[in-house]
Length: 227
Ligand SMILES: NC(=O)c1ccc[n+]([C@@H]2O[C@H](COP(=O)([O-])OP(=O)(O)OC[C@H]3O[C@@H](n4cnc5c(N)ncnc54)[C@H](OP(=O)(O)O)[C@@H]3O)[C@@H](O)[C@H]2O)c1
Image (cartoon, rainbow, N blue to C red; front, side, top):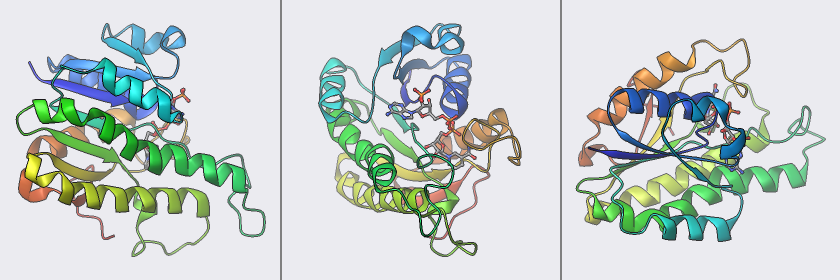
C-alpha cells in the first residue's frame, strides 16, 4: 500500500485530497493544526497528526515522529492568503501579515521537506508536490496587486525549483501544482471549479509525474504554467 502525507488536511483542498486518496486505497497521514476539532477529517477514518507548519520546532519533531516510515507522496498543501481584507493593497501592505504568509507558504514547505527527507528517501521513487498558484506566475500577472500572496507563492516556486534539482539524485520527483480557482474558504464562492474536480485532476497529474517532469509547474488539468 502506498502512503501519502497531506498538510492542511482538515478542510478545503487538503480534506478532498485525504478523501480521494483514502477512497483509492492509500494509507493517508493527514496533518492539521487541530485534529480534535477536525470533524470532517475524523469522519474519513485516516491517521491524523497535529502540525502547525508555522512552528519550525514542531516541524522538526514531526519529521522525527515519522522516522522509519516510508512516504511515497508528500502533498504540501497548507497555505494562507495573506492577512485580512485590504492588507495586500498597494499603500497599506501589512508587514506582519507578509512575514506570516512567507513563513507558512514558502519557508514551511522547505523546512518540512528537510524534516521528511529520511521518509521520502525510504520510499522508492517518492514524489513531493507543492500546492502553489497561478498567482505566483510572473508571466500570467496581468492584474497586479495581491503583493503578499503572489510573492509568497513565487518564493515557494523558487524553493520547489531548487528542490527538484537537489533531490533528483535521490530519485525524488518534485513539482509545483496549480489547483485552479476552487470554491473553498480561500477561493471563495465565485471559484470556477469545486474541490472534487480540482483534486481529481491534480491526482491524475501527480500519478503521471516521472523523474523527467521534476521541476515543472502544472495545473490541475495538466497544462504547463509559465513561471
Ligand atoms: N482555493 C483556491 O482557489 C486556490 C488557488 C490556488 C492555490 N491554492 C492553494 O491551495 C492550498 C489549499 O487552499 P484551500 O483553498 O484549501 O484553502 P483553505 O480552505 O483556506 O484551507 C487552508 C488549509 O491550510 C491550513 N493552514 C493554514 N495555516 C496553517 C498552519 N500554520 N499550519 C497548518 N495548517 C495551516 C488550514 O488549516 P486551519 O483550518 O487550521 O486554518 C487549512 O487546512 C493553499 O496552499 C492555497 O494557497 C488555492
